[in-house]
Amino acid sequence: MGKRLYNASLLAILIRMQTLTIRSIEAKSHPETKALLWYLFVGTKGGQTRVRIISQLRNKPSNKNRLAKDLGMDYKGIEHHMKTLEKNNLVTKIGDKYGATYFVSSLFEEGQEVFDEIVAKLIKNGGDEWLR
Image (cartoon, rainbow, N blue to C red; front, side, top):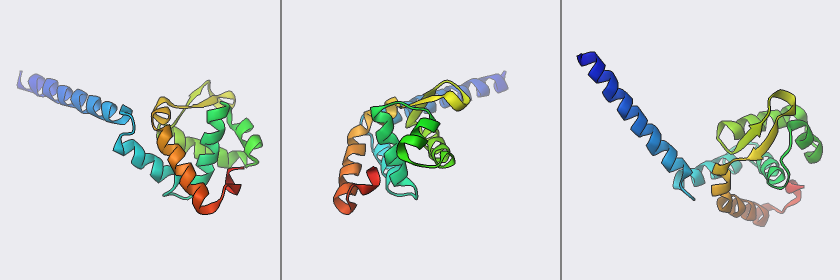
């Protein structure tokens, strides 16, 4: 009986923690979302490439092959950055394997003002040649 009560209490705590995490992630311009975007697009190597990918997906959902062609990049490089963006819930996909089409996620859409701020600052500091 005691073990069963312990498991039920633990489950209730985990559910509450998950709910708090989901609420905090989904909050518009939440500080954690803002920090995530700054980290992925400015604070890490490859951030500018991820900016290019997200900018492309905002305008036209695509598969990885189409992204590679449109951005003039290697397919493996696109694949690497897409895994990072997907792992951080900034893109979603429909379909499997080679033909999967990627879209910006609802989490990204809620923080897109932050993304636009990041892009504006990057352009101000270094020009926009890298966006092409």
